Structure formats: C-alpha cells, structure tokens
Image 1 (tube, rainbow, N blue to C red):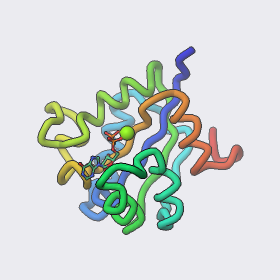
Image 2: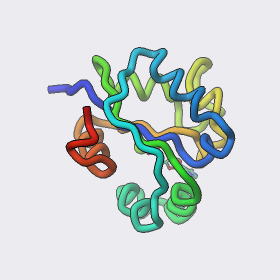
Image 3: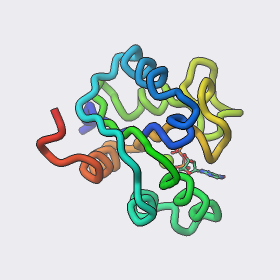
Image 4: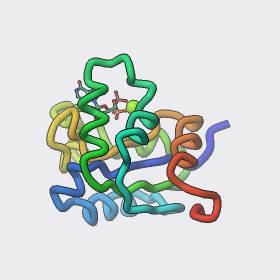
Length: 139
Ligand code: IDP
Ligand code: MG
C-alpha cells in the first residue's frame, strides 16, 4: 500500500546558492507538510552509505564528494501520493530536461549539482527518513 510520506534533501548547491527558503516555499506551496526538518552536513561516510545503491556508477565518487561538501537541509514530507507527486515537483535528474515549474528547472545547476533529492519509492522514503531522523524528531 502506498504511504503518504517522502524524504528530501536540499543539496549543497541549493544552500550555497541561497535557495533554501525559495525551495521550502515551493514544497509547502505544492501542498506538502513538513513532518521533520534538519540543517546538517553529511560526512563522507554518511554520503557513501546514503548513496550506496549507486556505488558502481561512474559518478559515485563525485556524488559522495559533492553531497558531503557543505550543509544540506533534510526533511520528511507528507501529502497524498507523496513519493510520486514530489518526484513530479522536483523534475528530471538533469535540469536541462526538467519541466517548467519544477524545482530542478528553477534552481539546479546541472545533472550532478541538481538542488534537491526526492525518494524514488515508499520503501526508500522510509529508509532515508530513518537515516536522518530519530523517532522523537518526526511529527
Ligand atoms: P535522482 O536524484 O533524480 O533520483 P539518480 O539517478 O538516482 O537521480 O542519481 C542520484 C544523484 O546522483 C542525482 O540526483 C545526481 O546528483 C547524481 N547524478 C546522477 N547522474 C549523474 C551523472 O551522470 N553525473 C553526475 N552526477 C549524477
Ligand atoms: Mg534516485
């Protein structure tokens, strides 16, 4: 059964470029409620673990270095059909291919530095949420 929660990170480029507030505003404006929120930075080991599924991809080293390079905002979001609707809101991985009105179209730099993460399944949303938040940090 589909759950109604997803997990996101505003990535280091988005924070560096000053888009934290604008992106959070777009997320809330699209009808998502914030159930957990944290301003933090991933260690190299945490970035490796979070993206372990991509360990064999040629960009893994670059991805780990970038995701641990500066602060991020992590959040658990709630809405009907959260995972799918949030993937629609963020747009394609490569901002050059992202639709108008999406977060990546507006704020991403390129395919690697693409402003925002969104879980790709209910199962991963739950795993990724637990990776960042203790039970008493989730509302
Ligand atoms: P997604 O974030 O849209 O789900 P994935 O294919 O799961 O995209 O890739 C995870 C992350 O890895 C991307 O968001 C992006 O930051 C990075 N990435 C994906 N493909 C490339 C690439 O070809 N070059 C560099 N970084 C990439
Ligand atoms: Mg993905």
